[in-house]
Structures are given as C-alpha cells and as structure tokens.
Image (spheres, protein in one colour):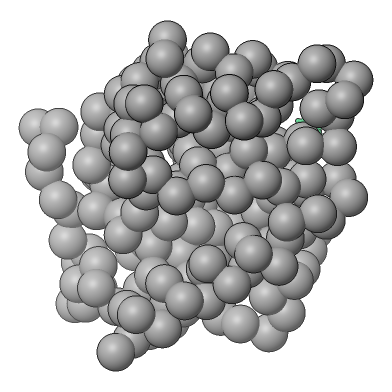
Length: 206
Ligand SMILES: Nc1nc2c(ncn2[C@@H]2O[C@H](COP(=O)(O)OP(=O)(O)OP(=O)(O)O)[C@@H](O)[C@H]2O)c(=O)[nH]1
Ligand SMILES: [Mg+2]
C-alpha cells in the first residue's frame, strides 16, 4: 500500500466519524501509561484503542485492564503500523460515532512519521529523559505532529532536563507545533491534555 493512501473503513463510515489520534514516540516514552491515565480520566466517554508493537499483547492488556476496548496489532519485523492493519482493527472494533479512537504506534522515532493512517492528528510523546536534542536529530517525527507531549516532567530535576531548550528545539523544526508538559505518573498537566482532546472532539462534531 502506498505511503500516502488514506484508508477508508469497510463499515460504511468515513474517518470523519471519530476523533482519531495517533501517538508516536520512542519506546518507553510513556505512551501506554498516558493512554491508561487518559482512558480512566475520560470515564464513560466512548473510546477505543489500537495498540501496535512488534510482539506481545502487553499494551492492549494494560488498556483492557482499565475497562476500555483495545486491539493489539503485532507487526513482527515491521517497525510501524500501516493503513491496512489499522483498517482491519477498526473494522473489528467498530468505534461508535463521535467517539475517541487512539492508536499507539510501534515505538521508534523514524518510521511511523512517514505513514498516513488517516488520523486527525499525530501526537508525539517525548520523554524529558531522552534529551532535548531529539527534535533536531529526528525532525520528521516532530514536523508531522500537531502536538508534542513532554512527558515525565517529574523526572526533569533528576536528569538535568532543560524543558525550555526542548520546547525551543521543537519549534525550530515545527513552528506550529502545540506543546504540553505532562507527567503521566503524577498527573501534572493531565487537565490540559484532556481539555485538548475534548476540544478536538467538539471541533470534529461541529
Ligand atoms: N516517572 C515517570 N515514569 C513514567 C511516566 N510515564 C511513564 N512512565 C514509566 O515509563 C515506563 C515506560 O512506560 P510505557 O507507558 O510502557 O511506555 P511506552 O511508550 O508505551 O513504551 P513502548 O510501548 O514499549 O514503546 C514505565 O515504567 C512507566 O511507568 C511519567 O510521567 N513519569
Ligand atoms: Mg506502549
């Protein structure tokens, strides 16, 4: 399937029926932790999650443990999800209209940026422990993203992370990027993240 193909579901709708976000980041930056916290905080809001990893169903199991519906895709030797894999998962999940649909891509800062999965927005999760130079070294991931979440801010004092420099580097590669500082561990910044999500869903519904 060509990189730019926009998949359309066989279930009759269009991708416009759901607010559809995809998280992209390095392994271990906190994607699943943030998703679990998000699912719990959204309460009864209709949502579904697609998890991508090379092997195991660990992440989908973590999401299901919160009570949310989740499907795990294993990519084997592949380093990213593609539209066909996501299309099959959506056909199985059948997300409700006007619901949240979250996709966690395979963790790496290179391949996932190049593939259009039909999402409304890509959200780059960057752990502050990774170093503030990552946006400059791996710009494609951050130029593709609408929002960057600087996660693990609770650890910033322990690893000399310079959050202002990190934000400046994000804006050097993507002047339009929105940025949120967050800790999925302590909950700091969660309200701003949830507000961002709800606003996007309202925009989609209007
Ligand atoms: N201190 C701290 N730890 C965090 C935070 N968010 C996640 N973690 C920890 O970081 C580790 C990796 O988190 P995951 O949520 O599994 O990361 P991931 O990005 O989903 O990882 P992959 O799916 O393997 O790419 C776990 O030990 C989490 O508890 C945070 O905000 N602060
Ligand atoms: Mg994960």
